[in-house]
Length: 73
Image (cartoon, rainbow, N blue to C red):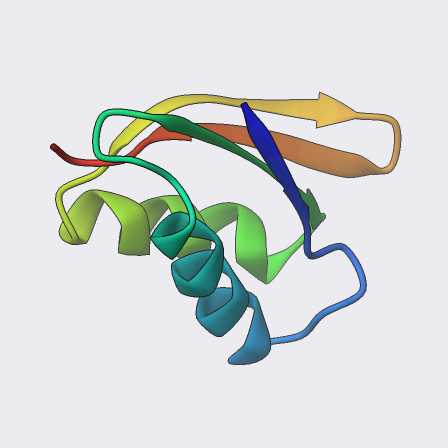
């Protein structure tokens, strides 16, 4: 599983980097995204669901959050 760290990014770069990261994942594959608390925790999962991907988990890891997503096939 690939990991993408966007904890230092702000919108709209968070969404741009997540889309670019997903381009590197095979359909049906998983991507782990590390993100800062706040706006990304709601906007990124929502965007991914809207685009047809499956959000597997969102969990707090220290000061950040870890999101696991399965790319749509």
